[in-house]
Length: 294
Image (cartoon, rainbow, N blue to C red; front, side):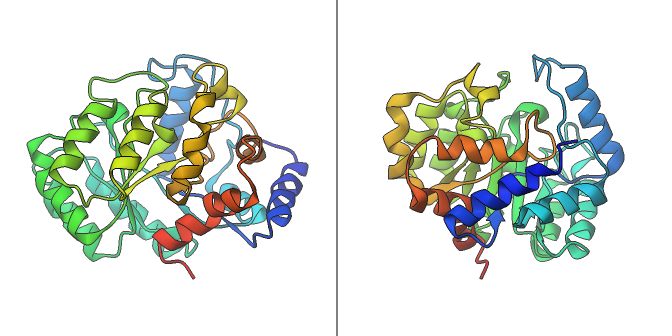
């Protein structure tokens, strides 16, 4: 667990920017037995991880919530995701209940290509889901799977963002990379996608996509940190484009499953030297506008 001074570092960052709070679009809350399985996978440095990955905030759910609130995170997500069929529906039941008793959590849902997907996604939309999670790498599915056609159409019509792990980091999958996402957006050009991890390591390609489709956002999760820069550095010659699409970049942390202090993710953004206005937009204002948070 990170020490007590960590809260001071995050609060200090906010105060320097004049922010009363941070909006973190990429946090994980899920049933405890599922979270434990996720941590076991990280501990084993499984094939989708590929290296040692200590969990910095390995505490119970109550303590994790208290930590985010002490940091001043005013809104966050409960990104849960299935790795097999017949899992998404009961995860959605759990995240709906979690959101109902956790008012600062954006009601989050998920899906998987399976015959029942249309039904439970419609249920989640009707019950007030604000954001969906799609994990192409862990789920090992093609986003163009026919069983998801109605799902994408519903989400496009409802204008509900989908936070999608589609880049090929930390390890490539059969369906990761920009190609499948380009095809998906050609079919559903009004679909709101939030590309997780800035699309790493295909940063350039996903910046291209964001500039072609004005409903595509990028989240900063783990990007620009020492942990990622050592293996998949963001190209220095693309830094100017971060300013060009600055209104569609959203702060994400991957809390609690990060191998460094929360404040280091914020420090990584500051050392880009893109200005306080850019930082305020990324850490709060862009997400506040997207999710209509007053």
